[in-house]
Image (cartoon, rainbow, N blue to C red; front, side):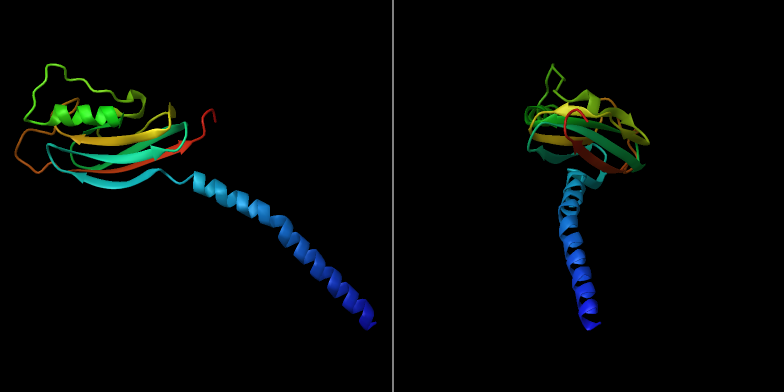
Length: 168
């Protein structure tokens, strides 16, 4: 009788060990999916009147990106996504010391929007590997201007940049 109990207990123990080992790759795979779903950039910024902020994010390889922005308080803002050259041109254009007849800069129009007064989520757009910047603009230089002088006009904005592999 004891032998039967020992064999049964041993069989149960072996079955338990095999099921744990069999589940290990699945748990590892689920953990990998969670890492891929982590936003590249996420947070909240308070942008004073006639100011702007940039939030950098990098792609190790080609991917599709999507930008989500919610204006939680303050005046409407403009949102742009630019590469390094676009950021450098942006800095030149918004600098009060440098005037330019050409008021354009390269940005990914499908990932941004001028005049965000509530919330905005872009469509998925393909980007090549590299470094990019999410620009949150509360200046009067481009699409949307803060209201006329007289207040602080601080725009509080929450943002999220997500990615996924191309073609999903």
